[in-house]
Each structure stands twice: as C-alpha cells, then as structure tokens.
Length: 406
Picture (tube, rainbow, N blue to C red):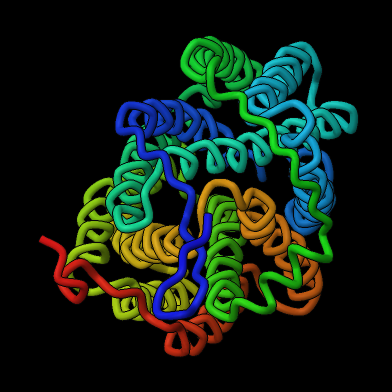
C-alpha cells in the first residue's frame, strides 16, 4: 500500500496485528525451541561417531548448503501451497525422519536422514517467521519479537540438560522417540491454529530481484551482515563447545547443566530489551553493546582451557548475554523495515544461518588442520569484531519517545 506525503510517495506496511495469533505463534515456537535444543547440542557428537571430531564440519557444510538452496525455493513453494501448508509439510518431513532414526543404527544412512531432518526444521522456522510477521505491527516489533524469543528460549532452556540425560540413559534412539512425540503435538496444534491462515501470494519474484532489493536498502544489508555474524557464532559454538568440553573431561551431565545456565539470559533479557528498543533507545546503541559483550567473552573462551566448571559456566553465560541482545535487536530492527508480504526478503534474510554454517564449516575444517580446537573461539571473535564496525554504521530507528508516541 502506498500513500502521498509532502509530494513524496512512501510505502505503507501492510499490517494485520493479531495479539492472539502472536501468542499462538510464540507458543508453537516454545515447543519447537525445546525440540530444536533437545537435539542440536548433542548432534555434533552424533556425527563424530561416524567420522571423528575433526571432520564434523563436513556434515554441517552439506546440510546447510541444502538448507540454503531450499530457502531460495521457499518463496515459490509458499506462493503455490500457502504459508500454513508449507509449515505442515516441514513438520511432516521432520516426524518421518525421526521415526526412521529410532530404528536405524548410527551410520551413513542415518546421517543422511539427519541432514534431511535439519533441512526440514530450518525451513519450518522461516515459515513460522513469515507467519509471525503477518500478524505483527512495525512500531511494536521490539515487544513482539522480544516476547516471541523469550517464550521460544524458555522452551530451549530445559532441553540441553534433559537431552543429555536422555542420551546417557536411552542413547539417540530415546532422543529421536521424544522428538517424534513433540513434532506430532506441534503438527496438531498448528493444524488447528493456522487452518484459516493459508494465504498464497500471486506475485512471482526471482532471486536476482530479491538480492537487488537488499543491495538498494543499505540498512537491510547491514543488519544482514550482523545477522550473519550472530549465526556464525551460534554455528561454531553449538558444534565445537560440547566437543571441546568433552575433550576437557567434563561429563555430559556437567555440560547439560552448563548449557542450561548459559541460556538463562535469553529468558530474562530479550523481552525487556525489545521494550527498550521500541520505547526509548531504538536498536543501534543496544546492538553495539551486545556485540561487544559477546565478542570479548567468546575470545576469552580460547584461553580458559584449564578452568573449572563455574568459570566455564560463567563465561558461557556472558556470551549468551550478548547473543540474547543481538538476536532480539536484529529481529526488531529488520522487521521494522518490512512487512509480512515481503516473504522473499524474509526468506533471504534467514539465509544468514545456512550461509554462516557453510562458511563456518569450511573455515573450521581448514583451521583445525593447523591449530587446536580452542582456536575456533578466537576465529568467532574476529568475525564478531567486523560486525561491531557494521553496527556503528546502521541508521538507528526512532523510538516511541523520539516520535512522541504515548
């Protein structure tokens, strides 16, 4: 929709705010966050059983290369079958993959099925993202995204400890059985909750057009670069932190407790930060501070190999204080620039994760040929340093205080 203001034509975002649907999407994200984290922190150990620690990055490179390609085809898929059906399709593939994995021993076939599962769950998150934006309102993006991420991360919080406990008692067969139950529950909830939200889109867009949009809108490109750095951080930390802690003789139980503690900032910080971004400061200053915290604490991880449980737990906690801030402020900033109809831009924005995983896998494979495992943390800190410079160049959004909204 367009309107004329002072002789200039400006685009009005097509918004249909629905508080109930935002809550429903957030509840679904709570369940999916739990299920995601139930596997993701022990997945690198699953892959290492096939090829060893040094070659784990190969699997992530392959998986996220496929994810990247699938996201480029997500827009025509949604245009054809609609947002809700794309969500159901992803969930169906995830359930089928988990069912097969409960019956198969760890090997090349099961690894191939895990890769399919990873593709389905990544597409699932992007589709849910598109649904959330279609029920949102720009000036409330910080609060909506903060609430959504807080609820999602509440689901994530308990998962690492429970998954490591399940792994010790029932091996990976028990892990995948719980995932079947969880994804089936999500399928039923979304089937009932989004049955009337299966909008299809007539506009046909090509990848070249989408990239051109991103290049024209410099602030979208800058926030994409920051998103890439954050996803690079997640990619490397999720894969190599548990492997490194295991090499330092921490038990799975200790690792599970560390990871549960380190995720607490996502629960207590994201919603308040979203409110502050909306009402008082905008996102830029808060983003700069968050990136600085995660940069310094991640670099420190490369130098505390002889430390005990509480030192590791404390520094990991600090990394997630910064990451929690980046996550909510990145989303708040991005979604204030667009609306839910620009699903091609949303899908492209979410390619930051697979691209970061692909780049991270390549870099880590080369790095580990010459340097020890803890060098991964230093590499991540260098990438975060570049994102800090990018954050300084962002054009800040105007808060409600600056706009005079009461």
